[in-house]
Structures are given as C-alpha cells and as structure tokens.
Amino acid sequence: AFAESICASSIIVKRRRSMRYSRIVGTGGYLPEKVLTNHDLERMVDTSDEWIRSRTGITQRHIAADHELASDLALHASRKAMEAAGIKAEEIDLIIVATTTPDMIFPSTACILQDKLGAGNCPAFDVQAVCSGFVYALATADMFIRAGRCRNALVVGSEVYSRILDWSDRSTCVLFGDGAGAVVLSQSDRPGILSSHLHADGKHSKILAVPGSICDGKVQGKPFLIMEGNTVFKFAVKVLEEVVHEALAENNLQASDIDWLIPHQANIRIIQSTAKKLGMPMEKVVVTVDKHGNTSAASIPLALDAAVRDGRIKSGQHVLMEGVGGGFTWGAVLLRW
Ligand code: UT7
Image 1 (cartoon, rainbow, N blue to C red):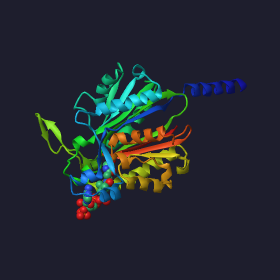
Image 2: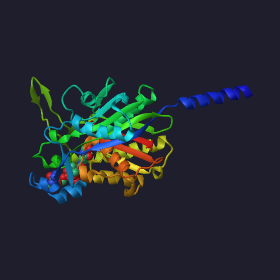
Image 3: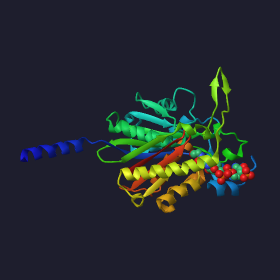
C-alpha cells in the first residue's frame, strides 16, 4: 500500500510538473495620431456632444491616417507588447490577429504583420469574431500553448473601422474608432489564463453587419456598418451577464474575487450594466471608451494595456475580460495576473 501511494503521488507530481498554462507577459497599444472629437462630429452630421456623451460615454475617437492599415496599427502595438515581454520577433511561434477590417481580402493581416515584424516561419492567421475577436483569439492561443504547440504567441486586435463607416449615418459613425492592442502570451507552469468561454449565435447576424461583398470586381450590397442599436444593446447586456457568471462558476469564484473587469468598450451604459449586475463598483472596471470610442477587436487589449502600464493591475490579481459583437459572438477570459 505504501509503495502504491508513493507511486500514485509521484504520478500526481509528474502531472503537475507537466501542466502547461499560458500567461500574458507583455502588453502594447497603439492609437493613430488624428483625434476626432464629438464637436468635430457636430460639424459633420446632425448630432451633439451632449447626445453622444449621455448615450455612449464617448468624447473622442482616433482615426487612422490614409496610409495606415490594420497591419500598421498592429505592428506598433505588437512591438510595444514584445518590448514589454522582452521577446524578440524570432521567438514568436504563433501570430493571431483579430480584425474585422483586414488590409485586404487575402493574405491575412496576421501574415502581413509577420512579414513586417520579421517574425519568420510560424503559423499566422486572422480571427473574425468582430468585437469579440480578441477574446476568441486569446482563447485560441491559450489552447495552442496548453496543447504544447507553441511557446510564445502574439495575439493582436487591430481595427480601422473608419473605413467601414457611413460618415453620413449619425446612428453609427459617432460610435467607433481606430486602434490596436496586443499581448504576448507565453507558456508557463502556473496560470495565467484560468478559463475561456466562447459563444456564437448566427441567428442574430443581421442586427449588426457590414453586408457588402465583392463579386466580378464590384461591391455587392452595402459595404458600410449597419446596426439595430437598441436590439444590440439589449442582447449585449443579457449575454455579457450570462458569460461572466459562467466564467466565475467554472472557477468557483465570486464576483467580489475579481480585482479588474476589462469589458469590451462599446458603450459606457453596457459596461455599467454588467458591473451593476456583478455588484462590482466602477472603480474596479477599466474604462477607455470615453477616449477611444468602440475599437471593436482592439478595445479589450487597449484597455488591458492602459491598466497594466499605469500600475492598476498587479501580480496575483484576478482579471475578467468580456466582449460581445457581430455574429453574434460573445465570450470571456478569466485570468490570474
Ligand atoms: O460592439 C458592439 C456593437 N455595438 C454596440 O454595442 C452598440 C449598442 N447600442 C448602443 O450603444 C445604443 O443603442 C446607441 C448608442 C447606438 C443608441 O442609443 P439608444 O439610447 O438606444 O438610442 P436610439 O437608437 O433608441 O435612438 C434614440 C434617438 C432616435 O431619435 P428618435 O427616433 O427618438 O427621434 C435617433 O434617431 O436618438 C437619435 N439618434 C441620434 N441623435 C443625435 C441616433 N443617433 C444619434 C446621434 N445624435 N448620433
């Protein structure tokens, strides 16, 4: 019996030793230089700073220069994340870019980024899950690392929504902005990412879409973002509450155990609603929507980078990221910093 128990405990030790986790070891963000304020928008469409601030919490957003593509924004953010992580381009062995506004139909923005970084011959691909894109990409990279298929993944959210907005449509053009956020996710023997939760329901594909496509060299359908704002709002509030509770339950944690909520930055009212349903004070919620607008897949890594760099997020703390977007897609990642 003694020998058996020694044997059993050595198996447990071995299993523990071979446990692989992923940890974020560096973050970076990039916002284009040009700032478009609500007052600028007042001169473009029938809107007001008061309406935009009270309905969304947004005061300004950044707009990419004509020559800047999603891969350029991604490049700036990635370099900062890699510098923070102390990782060189040749050490990256997986690149995932979450984007809804790729440089071109193909190759993927991840492949273009790989070339710009000089990152060599590693797998590189885009994830298309709109505003949930970063959560999807991070969850995917975590699974690659835990499966032992890579050691250092570069995970990026990069968007140039200014290119897919109808600038004469006041109900959508005031909401979005351009930007990129990146993290380096590395293999570790301690977590890191505790769990990830991804969902999609294609039945709701029409309430938020860019329904255009290219055929025979011509654009078919509308190549601009359309949205049933109110329906999206209600859907977002409902599924975000569900997914944050799913993440807490899986880890036997209470909302009070979460040190930082990093929500997708779409609308301050959606963010406040999730915090309220969790019973979480807004002091524990990272908010950047006022300064960036909705940067879709870039919004969570941009908010994370802001809170890491200003020292709010500290080692050992629990961080809960959540997002929702077109598809409809939604998800959450819970991690220990
Ligand atoms: O990343 C995920 C994707 N997006 C989102 O999460 C967005 C979710 N939805 C929202 O954030 C909100 O629904 C909006 C901010 C888009 C709109 O807020 P709302 O409180 O739901 O307003 P509403 O759509 O019910 O519109 C109220 C009024 C309408 O006028 P009438 O019909 O009541 O006369 C709109 O025409 O506000 C009008 N309106 C505007 N007025 C001034 C819509 N856009 C504007 C505007 N400026 N920019």
